[in-house]
Image 1: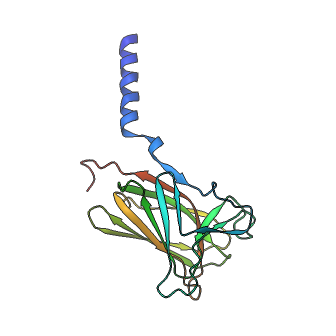
Image 2 (image 1 turned 45 degrees about the vertical axis):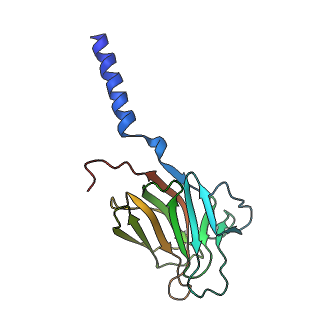
Image 3 (image 1 turned 120 degrees about the vertical axis):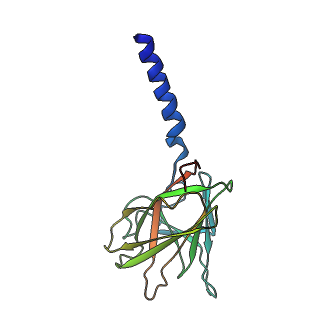
Length: 189
């Protein structure tokens, strides 16, 4: 009986180890960047934990600023370091460093300047060339919220989202990007 229990336990642990590997998931949280100031320039790209965020200014942007780290002392942040594409209508592009597919699980979003009514649209491109889209509405002022991406945001080669135009749509900041390398299996359609 004892041997049967040990074998069953070992089999269970092996199955869990092969099907559920939380070590593969990563959280990009920007804590490794200097963030003592309220707002601090962070360049045009940021690489962390096997993923890269790239800043792309809007067409004809006269003053492309790049990314900015939003420190906890920023009056609309008041928590850990966050990130923003710091020019109107700039695009943020998320890719994996090894060009392998990934899944975007969730992201924390908040208004950069305490505005409300912000809309952020995420556009993913899959390895099959399919486009997946999810839109989030930030309705509350000064509130960070975790937004879960739908199951379709898997087997991605890139995800993009655009900063507000600073006229009709206010800007946002983001933090805690949860990404997982995709493991394609026969059940994925």
